Image 1 (tube, rainbow, N blue to C red):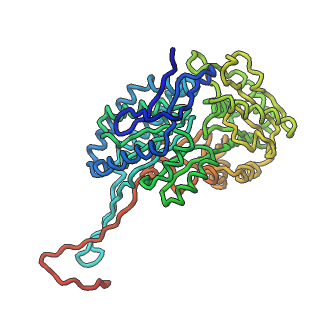
Image 2 (cartoon, rainbow, N blue to C red; image 1 turned 90 degrees about the vertical axis):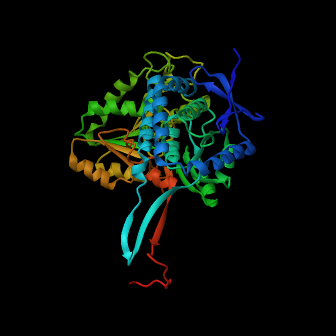
Length: 495
């Protein structure tokens, strides 16, 4: 069977372009190329941006009621298509079908939030700020938005950004990861079926060339990016130099603190799921567990039991709990860091390199638990994006907080405890953007905002929620006065 060739989506239709450059899309469970995706040239990127620019003129003037009707229809169509989109995600990303369905559900929650956009665009109004004068404000869309999304959540991350942009009157050019391109094309077709005008939502595939062309294009007003910290920093710098509004979410090294008064069995269950789910390929994965006081040995035993029981296999196979990593390079990076751990003072309690009941043609790596980890170890310093949990031991809660605050990232963190006082101290002192108390992966619901601190976020705005509304709009303040009859204008005074 010949490998499928994909296409861009520009101005409401498939666009194949010159296809001078393409990239293979691989099924990571088999290590086999399943299709090819075109890599857009700067001219093809410009074609998509121009389509979005022209569509902005009418879409930004479209009534809120019509916009929300389109969003409601899109939500309904996407809910009907969950299994179809999930199958594509599993095929290209490798995660289990349950994981894929779960990420679509989290994206749907943001679509629902965006459908309520009229209540989020309420302006302020002040009457009689001066005699016969009123002041009010409105929020207006920016223009063309570039949304650049990563491989680990082919549906969820785009759904965290572009529905809010569209609801607020912007138009979008989405650049999905070239490793997982197909879900974005289904989203484009569903938007069209929902009645979204052509050009409001476009998809261009590509690599760094396409990203640079998007971020520097003069008609792009805002850039929403999710990826590694070096890439996020680079995008923020070049977009900022171009005078564009930018939100760039980077990497993470999320810590979870376990106190002796916690339910250790429950903590071990949650930490195993948080470290191994999606094969560890998520920016909110817990990759460091900090055992405080005398609970470390018991916690280590419980974690070994839980992690050893995790079923590794192809994402489409019944019973699989975690699938493969995205590529051979990703797997090799994790292998190198784990192999170096004993020489860096750590002890491997469970070694994912020894996983045997899987198809060796794929990019599988089993759950891994490394104890007595220090800040100097590669498994601690690097964002591995694999199912690896580091166990660090500290004497006190304050020591644990200091360790977290020394880390350059500040995405998510958690504490497991039965003490309200300890939880309060933790959430007040820790320098991290998203915090869970007995919740290992504290991803905010859609009506709050997602994003970290420090090297995990570049720009002033987080994703979706109130910050998403603020990011995709700008405020306009109006002061007005009406006269019953023609009057002579005087220079304003304080009266």
